[in-house]
Length: 118
Image (cartoon, rainbow, N blue to C red):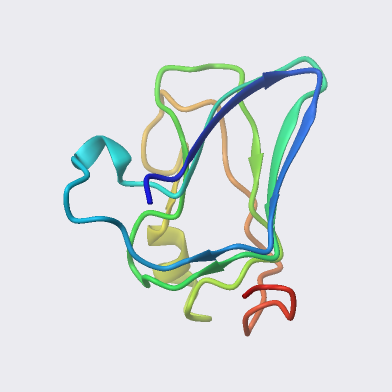
C-alpha cells in the first residue's frame, strides 16, 4: 500500500471505513503516509473518518509541506491507541512543519475499530 495523495477544488473527498495496516517493504520514504492532502481549494475538504490506522506510531495522515491551501479532517478514526501523544505523532501538520497549511483535527477519535471496517 502506498496510500492516498489528494488534491481537489470545490469538492468533498471522503476516505472512510478502511483498514490501514502495513506498507510494502519496497516503498521509499516519500510514501510515509496513508493519507496526504496537498490541495483543497475553495470549498473543498478531505474528510478521513471511520478508518483504522493499526501501525501505531507510523505516519497516518499528513498535510504536504509547501502547499498553502489544503485541509484534512481526521476526526472519528481509530488510531490503534487512545494515547493522545502517540496519536499526535501519527499526524503531520503545522505542529510539525510551519510550511504546512494548518492543523489536522483528530478529536473526537474512536476507541475501537468502526463496525464497517473489514
